[in-house]
Length: 312
Image (cartoon, rainbow, N blue to C red):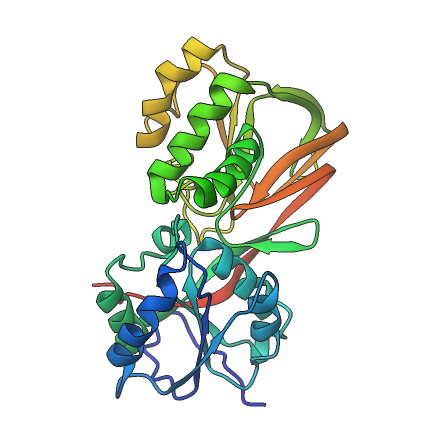
């Protein structure tokens, strides 16, 4: 197998790309975009296209893609999450680069990597962008390139998954609707032993504990506005339990990323986090819901290479 290793900043011509298309992304709209994508890529990026057939399939496809030099996730954050986990199973010296064509509901990974929202501009990035290496998080054996969050956020994510189907909503509006439902119906935190960077754990009572590589989740909520996705550190945001009135007052500040100095908010930076509770605590990892009583989270510095817009 040929090595795919490149230096950061390299502008690389890809000759054997693989497009992993989730046709169900954004209520099935992604399937209707495939002819447009193929037309935009014609003569620009040699590639083959594979459609996923259900949950877990994108991961399987990516895991067997070592012969390709670029694997492009076509869909939303869930598709990217699966493709990332597949790619991370390939030894680093043979691991293809990751590309994104964001056509899903949330697209927070697009924001983390600076990929344009406009589809034609995102295709241009694949054709003429540069390679950069980004940090990858690991939680209980699952890889993530944007966020892990325990507590309230996982309840919101679960409700958003439901609303995506029943209310046909997406983006920030989808997650905002789900958040308001949870705030009014299940505004409860959790208690756990939390340890940072090998330090002795302490008992924390918290509403939200977010451990992130990127700045946003939930379709644009700026939960960790100062996060840098390639600095070798997680940005951590812990929010103390709040009453409903206090939560509603602070919500606009969280959306805008202006909450970091507020009294119930604790910001910090770490390389690892361990959360242990006496009961299962809901969590989300790049929008996928988990339910465990122990979470071991660590960071792999610059572990995935992505094709992103060229820096000036």
